[in-house]
Image (cartoon, rainbow, N blue to C red; front, side, top):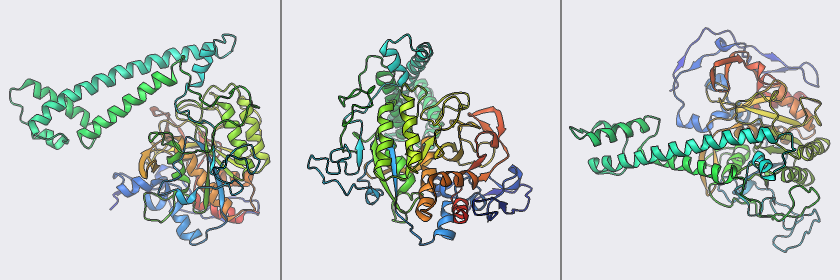
Length: 536
């Protein structure tokens, strides 16, 4: 049972939203301030943890998108028209048990015959295209700039400073992690011998009587400290430290290595006309390449099949475009991936990637403009550095220096956490009154990962596909609405929150939620479908 702490409440009334069809009412949840709704003070149940992004603010006191309510009260058994959603990301496990029936197939292409049957420039592109080939690890963009030695580049000095800071930071992380892991291993041996078992919990540690054994006392102190960070047992702690150290080493050995050459496709990444590289294998190159699979599950994991998770959208085909490596993506790959998606029938594109240096940002903006002209909605992740994007340029984007947008179908999404109130904006989420359009669930999201597994991940990378899923629902149920109308519906129909929230994870920095995005709202699937039904 949920434990709810009642706060002085005002009555819930209906919010009026003006649609293109006139001043129709949308049954909404008007959140005038934090005192208008009870606050949840209990921990989320396991089911709530796995589904919170689909829950309803009023019914569950969790800032989800009311997806379950939309299916129960609006969609019911209406499947709508099939919508193709292109996922530009890392590889996708298209054979996953919860995704395998939802993958787009290019019916104009004959598999594995080595011929470009549909003459679209891509040979055997059955489920999309792999612009990375066998590439996995890559440098960050500012490291590529430094490796080029082009000191005349106006960003060179900034890149050099950032490199020095990042390299020192991750070198320190490496030292710290190695020391902690070494200490834990030594403590683990002593404790395992004392308890006569290799895995143990905080409760087990409390049963140890060390007596005068100072080494054992120290071992218990170390283990208690580490397990006290929230791990269920010592094996989970060791696994987390191991994974953290692996990530740190990847950062140092590949992302920040000026001598590393990751690209294996044989093309010139600075020549947009050098095309035809890559291949049709859209699968991850290894199990840890899980980002694209996780994003895909948020959008479209098969609903009500008794398996791990339910996606937001119920009648979707996923087009897989592998273009995001373990490092920064190349502008050329992204620009071509966007154009591929548009030319091959996608009406929604999800882009859960981004960077702060972009030598060919014009190529990507041109592709975004192309998508807009072709009536395709591009859903973009805001980024995870807790920055104001009105002051810090992040790519991709659809404008330069906060100027005119190149189209009206590009929507940028910030991330919410599963706790309504001052902490509802994820501490990592970027924001911006000009450059972030909406917020959606993005922290602690449970979804699909390779080899029929599931895991919890967080980031605006998870918030964007939540919105892409709602966009797909609208385009499925109301196919006559344009991409520009769908964007406006997503922005207009969300829940307005006027309370102050913590920004950038800094408890000293509290601002009104409506100062963090253009719409001032968090996306709500239930309201969006109602408004879509009223829009002509």
